[in-house]
Image 1 (cartoon, rainbow, N blue to C red):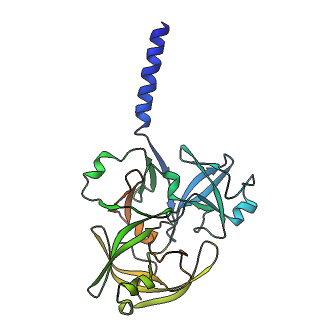
Image 2: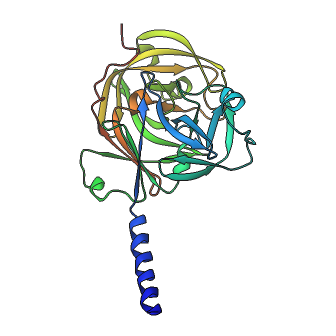
Length: 291
């Protein structure tokens, strides 16, 4: 009898392990009119927070207001690891501080929380689904375009193409769901590529604020064409940076969530690919449309 029980235990363990290898965790999210993705998470087993999923950052960042007035405990910043429960899964992360986060959120968490996993963002269902393996039918689905992930330090980028007056430029763009606008183009990179900046119609000039409250002057202009994989977006109101750039040690273009939300996404952090397929938001009007 002991032998039979032992064999049954071994079989049960293998069966459950096999199921865990293909398990998925579905997490509802909201997206507001500022294009901020908000997900409910439990920090340090005590505090329920609304957090922005920001692929342009890493680890967990909480606003100074939340750190000072909302938490039931006082986390030690930068060094200690804390539990962050997202959906049914517990993750371990350090904590950092910032002055600002996306509208209506207490902070943000980065893509690296899900290293070694596949993250699906489905804007038709408002679901984030964490997969342990890539869905088998995805690779054969021709509706999805597949792009290789490239890394700069701890951030990830994909290749995209811009076009103005028959001048085309390909480059890698930071994949940033935390950036609320469409695209931020680096003016120095455009000048190096001899891209016709002056031919882009200026829509407006404004000041944006970075995560630490720093001011970033930007010009919003009309880009004739943005191509991501095989999909094209026409007359996109993009932002041009001149000074006070988002990254200190690299000139970089950025794809923001007003563009990225137009696609259902699979972020494959096992094989380092992004899969995109247009959703019901693909033809939605832009916030800063041409006047």
